[in-house]
Length: 361
Image (cartoon, rainbow, N blue to C red; front, side, top):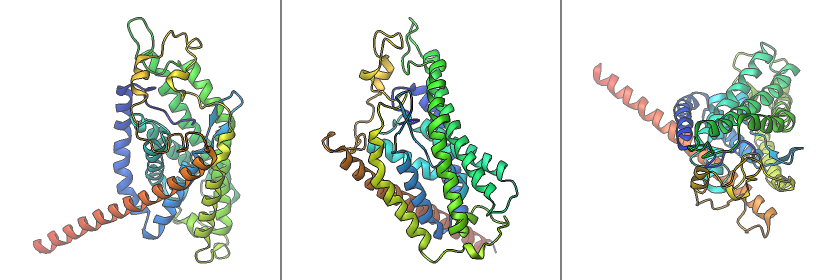
């Protein structure tokens, strides 16, 4: 789908750069999350991570025959902060790669750099810029969220286009034939940006703006978590009944899980995600599949639900729904475990400091 870069399309050297970018981001995110996400917000983060996983399962048809998808990164950044989004989207992407074969394991670093780091920070930055000092309940906030979501996903798509398009220029054999992705920048940028400027970006904007608009009316305290000190007209009237927001969120996740097979209606495949044997070699002026692409494309062989299916395409709808349910459970559980580990480590450090202080006094 869309921006999920499979293994083999980026060189090992490029993949190493992706991890060099994301590993420090993950380390910072783990430290920041313990400050932003208190115990009572862990279920919210788990639900948002599940939503990100689900929206990335939806294939949206693009006029040129390819597909794209939303990410959900900016809405997480708006609600719980961009560092929480780094963690949530990275977890979703990790299980997509490991269990569902959606995105490469070697390319996981750059998939996260694009969708879990760049997208939420760009989206959140644009949101803050447009929202300014407006009240939390102002329509301007929902508009800012929509524009931020649109900007964030397009920034991620543009980065992926650059990563694809540089491969044949940086990595080729003595005869000039590409070793990995065969697409040049004049092919990757139009292909990726057409899909995301026209369709996927709009879907991301509607999702992000729509959630903020709903929370302005139904659950202003949740919207306030990452907006301390921002004025809000009519906050008492917007206070939710106990338990209602979580029930609504879980209901929305359940509906999305049931609807995920709609992505199967999309014709064709996403740009840059063809299996090596499916490449149109003539179109790219090649006489054979690039050797590096052919070598690394099958690097990970252990996806239990490869292509969001386990029925060998006998019952793809059932496969998609079961994959969605399994993905929700695993992503949510992973968020709970990670946050529990972070809290435990923080508590242990605090106890050590208190013990050292007591000894010194």
